[in-house]
Amino acid sequence: MTEPGRAIVLGAGIAGLCAARVLSDRFDEVLVQDRDELPDGPLDRKLLPQGPFVHVLLGRGQALLDRWFPGLDAALADHGAPRMDWARDSRVFHLGAWMPRFDSDIVVRTSPRAVLEFAVRSQLLALPNVRVIDRARAVAPLGDRAGITGVRCDDGTEHLGTLVVDATGRASKSPDWLEGLGLGRPGTTTVKPATAYATRLFKAPAAQLGFRCMYLMPQGPAQPRSDLIYPIEGGRWGVNLFAYDGSPLPADEDFFAFAASLARPDLHDALLQAEPVSEVRRYKNAGNRRVHFDEIARWPSGFAVIVAASCALNPVYGQGMTLAAMGAELLERELGRRGRFDARRFQRRLTRLQAGPWEMSTIEDLRWSSTTGRQGPKARAAQRYTDRVHRAAQTDLSLYRVLAHVIHLARPATDLVKPWAAWRTLRANPTSAAGAVQREGVGA
Ligand SMILES: Cc1cc2nc3c(=O)[nH]c(=O)nc-3n(C[C@H](O)[C@H](O)[C@H](O)COP(=O)(O)OP(=O)(O)OC[C@H]3O[C@@H](n4cnc5c(N)ncnc54)[C@H](O)[C@@H]3O)c2cc1C
Image (cartoon, rainbow, N blue to C red; front, side):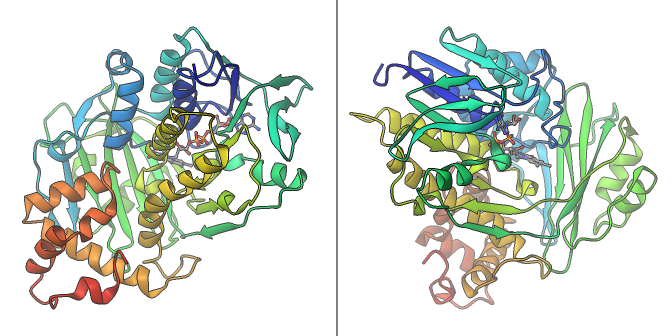
């Protein structure tokens, strides 16, 4: 143990569970606390409004979860979660063509959020030095501007610890807490699209349709509607219908009509063979919000704020849980450094780690004129270049392999502007003059 004592994790969402796992290797004891009642089974929770919505897990997130929880795959299999190779088993339509399909290492177990969270929590609780308590809302930090030493809960209980990790998601009160300690209030950047979506569960047809997952990507600004079929346990599909321009979402009776209005009939045709088994749920607050904790000049020791609490992304790109795991991986690395954990250094590194996914999400959202936020020339150039990469990848499997790993956060987006990728991209787009990448400033 390099950091004896107790670590406290606020929030038992995916970020909190992953953080607790890496902390369990370093601390004598890890206490995870959540405001919600945590069910003793794979059930939706009262205080997690996003629980019933489709939760896509990206390849990088699955790989990290598998490394930390060796029993997770078997546990998810026991829950009936299908195993899917994203690149082989998905049909993805974008910019006028189906993307190639190939055998890859982007393999995930697909499940609803409640199943994944319960399976991860159960694996975590099997560790002897981890405790999870529920119905314990953190209301204030203990300590002073020099360092955080614990947390006070809404029932007056106090928990002391050497490190407090805020993983309370979008509900985080850390900006208030820092301000209350006299450390200043971090600024916030928001990019808010008018994106909304409707989710409904279906019983999948018994017949094989030649795919496990199907995704019609939007094409801004011309094609503001898209769809997703995501396989989950029990032979069911989670189906999302997206509207990127703020147009009204369907209720139960209009779900099929909305599906029929999409640019391609494939999802609608597939749904005609399936049977709806849930009502339609709609979601509207799909904003990106980044809190600039790195701006706080004097960061208190023993305190860290991770993932959705510091960088919440538009859920339509399915990055949230994977980014949560990547934040925990960074925590693992920083805890493993020689000497004491440097909380300020961690927070700054986390900001850098989150910058890539933030750009991927917001640059896509800025394609829509209804999105609030500044659309600068860099974003426009990145959108044009991204479209070129996608077009080139339709017929260039090597390039598509790289692109698929970027989408799954397994490689940085900057890999797509390296000379090899840029050459293949521009070669496949003869109308684009050589050197356009540099001229447009992408990756600069
Ligand atoms: C509609 C929707 C769909 C989404 N779809 C996807 C998807 O497809 N793929 C994906 O990867 N991600 C998706 N996400 C993101 C995902 O749900 C998480 O937000 C993301 O994993 C970040 O997780 P988190 O643990 O930081 O936050 P959360 O998952 O929000 O967890 C925060 C936890 O903190 C607890 N908490 C809050 N305040 C307190 C407090 N004061 N004291 C104690 N506990 C507290 C909450 O009860 C909760 O359990 C979606 C989000 C939404 C809103």
